[in-house]
Image 1 (cartoon, helix red, strand yellow):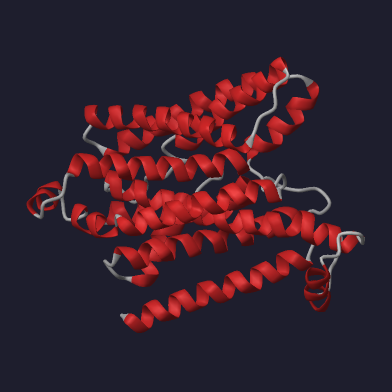
Image 2: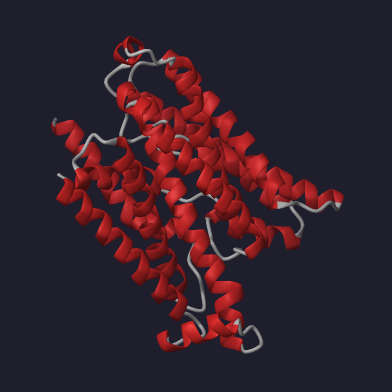
Length: 333
């Protein structure tokens, strides 16, 4: 079991390293691997290649890596909360709720002429994520069938997306372009200013999740067992949903809604690790999310360059078959 964990984590870390180098090199401006280190050491932002690497590609790669990890981790925490492997921020409508409130903020900023900081974006996204989560939890109290709950989440997502589209339609021309691109999911707007906030939130999210890992382990055996070992289940559930919502809200604030990563990656990691150790699954999910988003972002910007696909278009191609396979296996079981 230990050998399996070592092997899986080693492969994930190697894949991240390889994908980072490829992402640095490939694009409308090709940068040779031998030149990357030279440009970084000289901090060369005067040449075209140096400016592209340092000001565009590095922030984008870091953001894709960290936000991908956050999204997969958020999905895993939601799956633990609802005790359902198909739960995830995109499917349950949480990403769409966050998208709606951020879209409202962006339109208001454009209409009333005030600047929107990264902190405001994250806060608005968090409020939207919590509102959507509240609806889903309220629905969970009314229905016992998890399939119905998933449908409720999807409907919440459709409603939030429809309202967002109305906002896009009536926004001014400049705002339409930014809002439309962001609402489809993209890492193209990454900047060093955003990276600072993303790093802080990622560290807080991962460490909080690791801190809750023992409690998650007990909770997965059932509420009665968790209570028997002295857990305050109510406080634990609140902490779990807050951390999950905050992580998915951060992703939505900076990259827009990204589909299927939050469902597919935790499932694949659980299958690969075959362990009940929550610390391993949490870190595995984070690294797996980083790998998937780095790979999908590379395809999104390189497949039809200079035209760029939305990140959700690519993640759906790889994630949807995994989710379909999960549902079919569940039916057979």
